[in-house]
Length: 167
Image 1 (tube, helix red, strand yellow):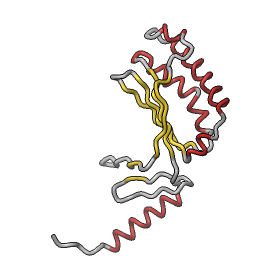
Image 2 (tube, helix red, strand yellow):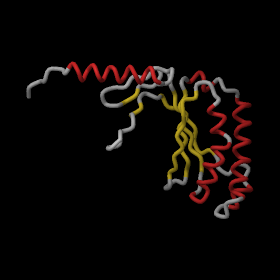
Image 3 (cartoon, one colour):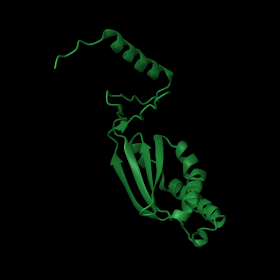
Image 4 (cartoon, one colour):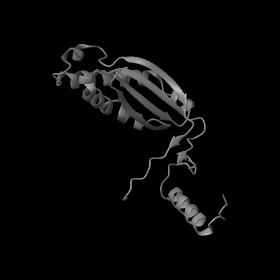
């Protein structure tokens, strides 16, 4: 197999595109894209992962309560980079992946603030469940969606989404 010489125009265009992306609005945290499409997260980044019990009939109420309570609160936190809410149908559990710029910023949040948001979450969940005929017994629970597991992971890379054809 013979090796082709680099194409200067293609290299220049790629460099200009990357430079334009940086100027236009890539977050202040520098992220390097590799040739494979992976994004290197900020050094020291951490992902908080939580699993909560979410019965199939209560998924909508769980998501609504998350968006009313934790969603807005997280958006205001120093170091918050984003979160993903996933649902495991087999286990009937919600999985939350919450990305933080640093472990220090995440752990600096006072426990009293977290407890206050949790109280709002549980109240929002009970309200949403009271309107949902599928899971009325959960509406009386102190915490309708109890924590099953909590942990943290070191965030080492993220794969950029594939571009759809025709865009």
